[in-house]
Length: 216
Image 1 (tube, rainbow, N blue to C red):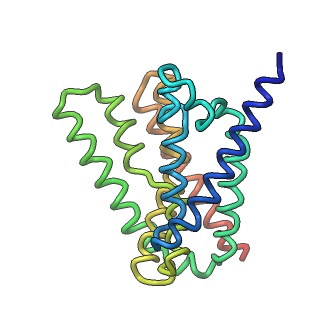
Image 2: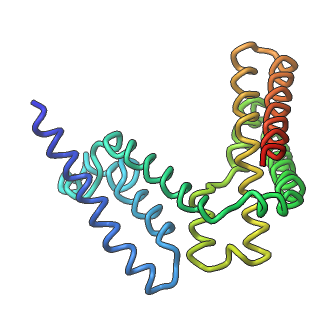
Image 3: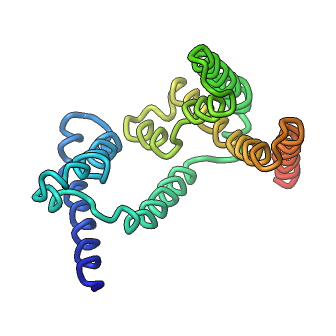
C-alpha cells in the first residue's frame, strides 16, 4: 500500500529537480533571478496550479506535485541554508552602521504599509482583526528571496541595496513581537494584555541587542 506513495514522492522530487535544471539556465539567459522562476514553476506544478486540473485531465498528474508535504522539510532546510550563506556576508559593524535604515526607514515602511492596507480594507467593511492580520502579512517580505535577488544582481552593496536590506532586517526583527501580539490577543481575547506582551517582547529584543553590543 505504501509503494504508490513512495513512487509519487520520488516523482515529485524528480519534477522539482527537473524544473530547477530548466529554470536556472533559462532565466539566467534572460537576466532574471532564478528565484522568480522557482516561484512561478512552484505555482504552476503545485496542487493549486495545474495540479487542480488533474481530476479533469488525469495525464497532468505525471507533471504535477502530488504530495507537497514530502517536499516541505527539504524546502525549509534550503531556506535556512540560503539565509545562513547570505548571513556570512554580514558583520556586526555593518549592522551597526545600518541602524538608521533598520529602525528608521524599515520601521516607517512597516507602519505606513500596515496602516494604509488596514484602512483600505476597513473601507470595504471587513472585520478589524482579520483586516489587521491580512495587512501585516502583506506588509512583510521574504528576506531569503529579497537578499538572493540583490546578491545575484550585484546590488547588495549599493545604496538601494542597503536600504532594501535594512527594510528586510526591520521586518525580521518586527515579526517576533507581531506574532506574539496576535497570538496573545487571540488567546486571551483582550487587546491591552496582548499589547503589553508585545511591548515586553520588543523590550526583550532591545535588551538582548544592548547586551550583545556590550559583549562585542
